[in-house]
Image (cartoon, rainbow, N blue to C red; front, side, top):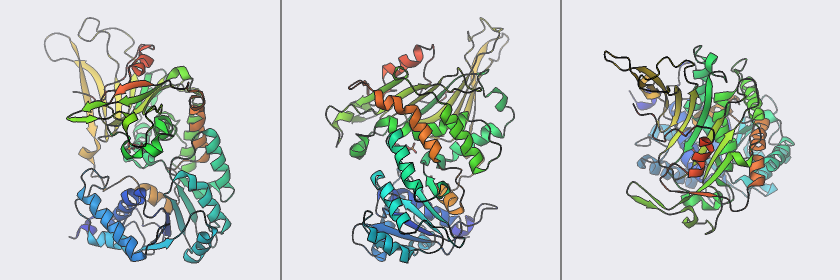
Length: 505
Ligand code: BG6
């Protein structure tokens, strides 16, 4: 059976309606690395309509044939690279052919009104405008589209805009950008991307919580001691110094990615799975996060260090980074959520580059058993039960339990029950943007950020962005678990961070 037949659309999933995908930034890294492989996978799953087309816009000269060749070469390069997000060992000609023959090119300057006039002649019917460009162009492009009438939805056709991150650099700039774009079109036409929401496991946290009666009753302050959310990366800043210097770990990861994980794990059960029901609960949760005081945050920056056989340079020695830079490559925070369910339960968040291992996970630490029945029987006091939901490097969950050690005497030991998604379900090929693109084309905004959600994230971290004392930064060697000061943040509450190596059985 040809491979394309084997990968028919999942049961009940219809191809997205025909539309033109207009990509601003057609030769950019995001288009090559994530959009094209995602469209390839969607084509393989038969989720693209034959009437689907792509119009790529770039400021350099090119042609339809030239853009098709460049993107084909990029796809082949990714297939040959085991470290790329595109986990295919070759580019299937039929599948890629479907996408490739629909690619067209338009040269244009995003700041020039003439581009948008030309676009009106090239785009009719349904259209998704994908802003795969630097953040400084978001407002300008949306205004160009709006002024040219390209965002008017007439005769049943939809016009939608996908906006990448970073959406603003603080609360004021996020509010200003929202105000600017919402003058041009309705909130329902904007799809603000947070790629963490395209991750299968992030969505499955909702299923885990709300499809299992046994978990929901204990998912609250009476039973939960604390929650730890970690996004540890081994990669450094590498070639992204220019972007990272004015950004830092807090802006890059916290109000967006880590807050998405926080919302999924802590929001109230929505009344339905409808987009606005889910987004409403997420926004309520984000709004309940108390502004974080400076004393509940630690900023860190990596110094030189060894990881395995490789010596890594300090952040300050990376390209395009100032030698006296105070940009944080690590941040640890303690959050409090002011609502009925979570009052008094600390949520500890940490993220960093060049850490000892790659690990994105949420760990829910439960309170210990109330009565010390097993005093003196092995583990004393009993270590708390921990449920760890892992997103990277492996999708799954593990629960740490106290059990009897086999033998004639009563002795308590630690055991782990663990499941990996891969052991139960065959995963469709996925670079992380397939669901997001498909959902936008089918008009499902559940996995996209609403204006209020974005602003609530920025509002929580705003005191930190405004108040960091100049030069206050804690250092950690590349390949470590972060700065000592981050350990102190938990130690002062009588707690400690879980290891970055996951659960050991
Ligand atoms: C991006 C950040 O949004 O997310 C990067 O800009 C970060 O700095 C990346 O490395 C992490 O995403 P993932 O999917 O690799 O965990």
